[in-house]
Length: 112
Length: 112
Image (cartoon, rainbow over all chains, first blue to last red; front, side, top):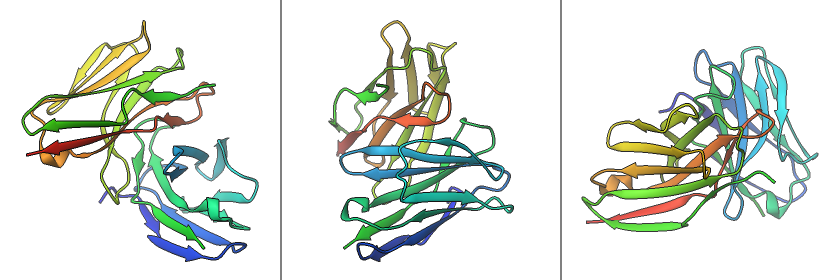
């Protein structure tokens, strides 16, 4: 157990729907990062939060959004889902900005 | 654009052999590099990291070598074991300094 908790582990939904993925960082970690992993694209950085504030955006689609709450857990919202959004979504956390990421076990999203 | 690549998508070795996994990076200003291991169905797991002021760093059965002149990173695994079978990723800080970016990974297969 890495200490980073992601729920749900698996999610199957239909095109056009909206889902929310949840991440609880390791105790004491203030930074949360979201990554998407697909077979042909590897691990792609989506977005980062630090202590409740957005710090950096990567290749995140406009249909996707995220937030970090006062208790430091984070949610990634994916809307108007398309088949191509099927992937593994990982959350990572760290104490210090951009150093020593710890990853969760991921949420496998399947869009049908 | 910036990218972190690995020279070989797959590497097959015999148990007990030494394994070398290579990675070329593009951001000459990056000062921090990490190797991650990802087993099937799990999130990436930190193996070892190195800062740009070092050429070599050793861990338990693993060594990371950094050649800044040619922007090359390698991971050496001594006495490879079946449990080392996984996908290995190198990662570096992106040019904006906002996130880790990952290569596409090398799949290491260890046969006994």
